[in-house]
Length: 219
Image (cartoon, rainbow, N blue to C red; front, top):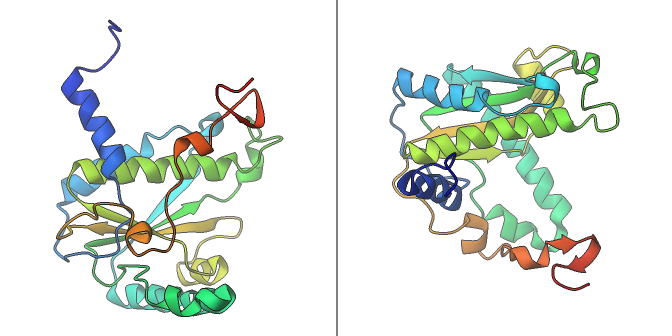
């Protein structure tokens, strides 16, 4: 028995949150209580980060006109993405890719400025700042699911345009538009799988042993 392990019921809750986390696009409006929003953001803030640099910065969008402007930027990129997809363009345009106008809370997650000063863990892998921010977003996602709230990560936008809209300083970079709030129901599987866009691959196809391309157990 591992004495450091959580009790069985608590372990099951952690794995359930991971398994039932969904990238939500359909929201039911409503509100998130201030104390709950703080709790979720504290969970994000407890994420691991390379060299303890904590490169995440969150901008809470409160003004309706800003939501509208952000939605406009996403719509521009949605159409550009559809054009780039060629023969799958029409199929892509039928997908719902964001819930910006319907979610209870809208956040923009950014990488901070001045990241070049942080060398610990980034000298050969400077992208570890992005990995750290991604961990914070995942923490937020899992905490939201545990609280019964939906969350969607929107990446369809031109970073410089969004940076200018939100007065993000030079050197910083918006990475994710985060839609957060109550939903009528969680998707039983990833939405893109339900829509037939792409199916998840099993772990066995992505797990190697000792060398790239060598399936586990084959030596």
